[in-house]
Amino acid sequence: MLTGHNMIYFSAEKWDSLWRSRQQLTSVFARQNKVLFVEPRLYLRPTLAGFHQGALGWPDLRRSSVGQISENLFVFRYPIWAPISGRFPLSWLTRTARQLSIRNALHQLQMSQPIVWLSVPNMVDLVHEIPPARLLVYHCVDEYSAYFGHTPTSRRRTEEREKEMMALVDLVIVNSQKLYDAKSPFNAHTYLVPSAVNYQVYAAALADPHLPEDLQAIRGPRLGYSGLISDKLNLNVLKELARENPQWSLVFLGEARVSEQAESWETLLAMPNVHYLGFIEMSQLPHYLKGFDVGLMPYTQNRQAQYISPLKLYDYLAVGLPIASVDIPAVNEFSPYVHLANRPGDFAQAVRDALADTAPERCQARRNMAAQHTWEARVERLSDLIQAQLAAKASNNEAD
Image (cartoon, rainbow, N blue to C red; front, top):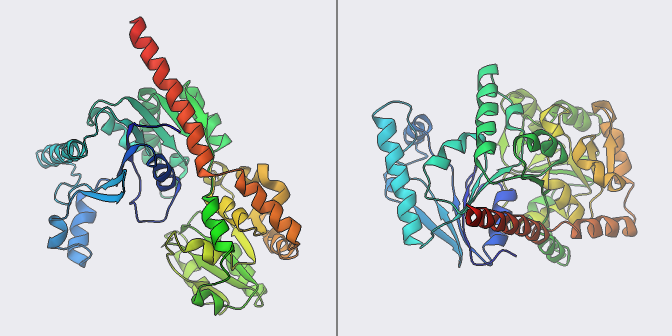
């Protein structure tokens, strides 16, 4: 593993939000390197709304910018009083305050010449604002131009910013083959490093017979979904699944952020065999997943779904769950372990097939597959790529 380096990861989500690859990778890297996980920059209008709604208060203005997670892992939060504003001179003042704040944090932590990770296209401006980096990495885990809510103008702006980003960085890391095909033409140093799982945590959970009480109270069979509940899911398919199969319990874990399908989500929640248990801490998630009978991957089969590499696929495998999924590229490698629905109308049959796939040897085969895809293995691969690029840069500098 990469050892003895300073690393800054500019994240698209907060540290204590739903855990994704960003938190997983930085946690592993921090075993041998000093890592600063930078939470998203704040914007003026949402910040003012937070104060107005009571979500933010005066104590938040005095909070420390740096928090410590473990010996080598720290979290940086931009000051609330310096949100992004679009108008001069306030925009210039808050940008300067943000720059000074993060530079002070790096000085406090004695972090110089960092390896810098950027995670979304709108961070391209940070390339010119941060201290000199030893290496710049763009970590692309989604096709951001395919997100819901884009206008033609905002989609084009996202694509332009991403191309600018890829032209500036030393490495582009993607997590799916489709993303590799889309991004590699813009940077010769583009590499595929898929998602993974914290396998040992799931193994420990399976050794513990305890199930959370709120899950125990739900009758089986339990069809479970874990992760962000958003418009990427086909909620109409799930409504039909719950309505036509009242003997099945549908269980949802995670943060709900539904806009385009808000009415469908409310209809789902009102059904007697649908149970939403809310956001579950990462440390407890394996104890919930082991209580499912089937893991669900009910994505809408659109452009965005073609590029994803769902962490839940690896999580479900790690507890030996049979999986019912729509047919998306991410599951191709795992097709022997996933029951596929080629179209939305086939999803109920995929669930029935999964419910019948309970033989102990099949469960163990799924777990064995997950054991080959650990975050430690991914960090080893990333370490090799980073070290090779650092060596190449050093060689080029000597030649110059």
